[in-house]
Image (cartoon, rainbow, N blue to C red; front, side, top):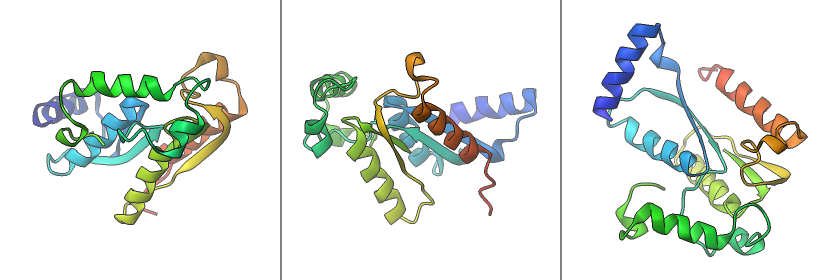
Length: 168
């Protein structure tokens, strides 16, 4: 992160960017990576102001209720997530890696995203979590869903969050 922050400082100078309002966003695995970056940022002096996560992957526990409720037929399955974690971790166990909000109703990742939000709240982090009803994993990414009310609402909420003055 130290080298990345120096690169970021160079870009900020080159393009007149204000790093005091740095927002990091991610969806799916990118949401988990953004959360990890946020956890590391304070110790590495990376000035993150806001974190925006869409249906983040933040837990390798495949036994929460949504992993069974939406195990198949809802864009991403429980078995696909098990496979993805194996690829991500290689030979490591989940406890060996630092990894671990908007959630989708019909998504195997819903419970873990919302549980992550509760943990942040319990740690006195200023957090908002919203579940978008009647939609699936990747709903903000899929072109076919771009004009749906669910996607437009999520995008409106994201834009409002990014633009909101966090000092209020």
